[in-house]
Image: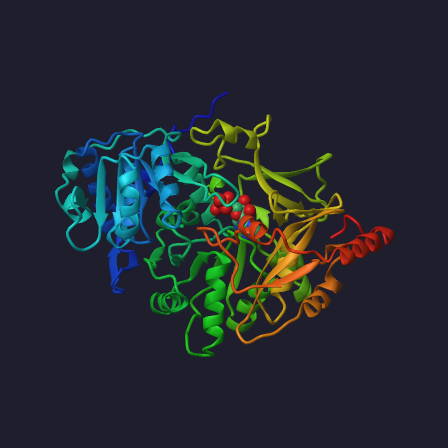
Length: 557
Ligand code: ADP
């Protein structure tokens, strides 16, 4: 028997209409390239998004057409987030940190018909332009646009919103697309439906996810050019929160200034950004008032427990660790201490905070090892599989990607996790980074976090190095804090009480920096390449393994 409820499609224009009327006066603040702050309201944003939809339609764009954006986080990008889907177009955010060749290949694969580009990014875009075949280049920012391009403001000024009639959108139609950053291989396109984005926004707003409300001031530091800035521009608009968009200035001083000035309550970004902010605040005790900030969502890479502790204990800021993927719109799990453990000792509470957390509503999880699905015992590792209404069911025009979907309709994430009895996942590795020593798995992330808790260590990445007997052994690549010293022996002694002996890295390499991907993650493939010929302390490894096997430790940890 069918229910007797309206068939009301879940689409982005519904979110925009609500913001334009209910939250007409709520503010959106952007840092412009000249550093000044631009302010306007949701009513202004919605009116301009409508003008953009009208203008793009007048240029000949039609529902289903892809429109690229090559922009920082700012109000015009937010207008594109809503204006492009409003006429049925597909917002295609381009990652401006990728190599120009890669961006050109992505634009060609997506067949973008138009691209919005920041004037300050034109020097990079000019390297891409000759390699792509795009009909309209629209430039956001001051000054005359280059030959053949259109100025965004002139385009909007000339638009006739009265002549634009909104198409009736089906909730399953595509609203946006984003290519994964390709940390472990070629970038693949994910095509988000209106329905997926709306459901993701609703779920994100709930209290045990991002918990966003009208009274919040949300500052996405995570870029709008990758994974929709974790959906925050959509979720923020859904609830009518004030939005604070940092533009091109992502250095600690600029971010702390915005937090103070705009009384930011919730922010989000990758650990690297927050490690910088932490150092900045630590160096200036009492100089900045960041008391407005109640939550800092951290993800994209494992958040070190030391950082989570430091923010809470020294600055009263709750770091909330989350995990997600481009393929998941992107939030998958988020961690809060469960109510049953709120009275537990600090140590135990921090263990929950350092995990990646429980699946958000409407996401289901399971993990698979060599023998099938693994038990939820918090110890057995397996590859995480997920499903839900905001999870991709295929990649865009990429049959090779089909291998990442199971026959029974789950998505294989490529992340190795443990799941505990309460459903908290801990990401131990990506399948391509896990260290397989003598047939047993060693978690590079667990070792990295323990190393980064050492007072002299700024950053650490642990990679697999080839080994004649054990096939792979862990090697730690370490960046020390300025002016600090530590030897391999000291670091080994620091790790020893926390891990089985055979987990301890065979070698410690001290370097000046760890190469990163376009989205700020350790580029382990490059590290493995660079240190392939490292001579390993094979003897230690053999002793460690043999000792561990005798003691019955193998496979623990
Ligand atoms: P890419 O696959 O190119 O890195 P994404 O930006 O979609 O593109 O990254 C998703 C991946 O980032 C996840 O599969 C996971 O490996 C990693 N990741 C995201 N959040 C976390 C986290 N909190 N802890 C550990 N790894 C994370």
